[in-house]
Image 1: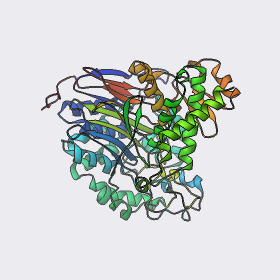
Image 2: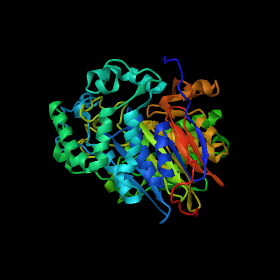
Image 3: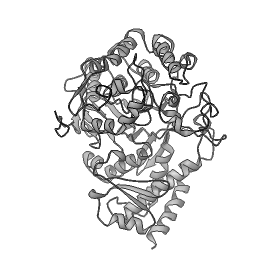
Image 4: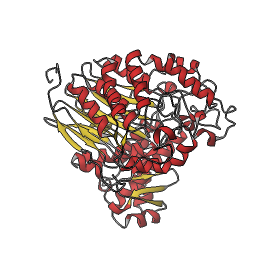
Length: 535
């Protein structure tokens, strides 16, 4: 198959009654659906789909990364966040890396202690119903038999090929260690398959305290990395945290607390609902300008007010969450502009009402571009997500610190039941992507239309990235007239996030996968084994 030939188009919109899965890749969606059909709940399915994403979307996540999520447990009515931050190794200090950020972008010293295996198994063990071997079975099969390389994956591999070739990952992720796999080529990962089989037979602790841990240490020593057995032995289990919450046009929204970026999403929501009603429409000139400034102001506040996640719950003056502060900002934005703006995500809901919004990553595309040849997965490069100069900063790089994250897995309620499970990859573009989809949904847009609609993003410096060919043609000129710079992006730009969401309809569950990447949605086609009666 040539690069210009297309492989089968993913299913972007799906409807089912007994559960729904939306992920960033069709094979991972199939893994989650298979678990639901086998009688697993949403938590089992989320773990299975997340493990599978590490196989079929290796440039975005995997065993070498970190995983964060928002969870709703239907039986108790409890909604909570799992902070699955990775950790800086004990030997990692600013002095040890010479204070230079460049050396932390690629290679073994860019890697924090991976948390994904521990977090996914914690979810399964505490909330799920199936053994680890069952949850890992779809990923083992996928690694052994392979999947077809998509046009997007080929493009990303071609873009990052020089970094892969400079690191140790090329033999595993480039054809003959030199060239990206062609579109439609079947990509198999036998080494990763054996690692997953070992986890299924010996348990996740082998990753942190057994033979896998020993292999990681040997590889790190060989390549002058920081991680050692004592780092891995302190298993980075997730910390259960209280979600942030806000009312958004009558709906109760729960989202990720620090070190995630839910504060940014909450502030954007509060500002938006205090804007003049006539200027909230995202398709209007003024609406787009105000959206750009709303995004910029929220990110300015986040950068100016970082918090340690364990200290944040004790802070009494949470300005970014305050409605009166948002009202002041909305008025100021209105006066200014109206007087004269690599990561992966999955969303799952089961028929019992359990829900998971899960975002995981190896940070940049292909992470550190380093991989252990005996284990088959990429290491993350989360050392680049620390502060390196301000010693008082809560995310200053020091041993066992957690990196600053941009994730915002979110669950929206109607009454007491989850109505929407949503999230996105895309670094700083995550929260604006969620915001724009939610605004459109609440304005009556059909689910697929709300996700596929054109998006924009505004940086701290006032640069607006937008899918210009899909938006009104006078918008770039208007933005520039209002003091912004404009970054024209292609239609359905990879840069502008990739929302995966599940929505509860009247008598069905609706899944939507963003066409900006390789996502798909699907639900069980047969009644799950030992299914509980519908509430």
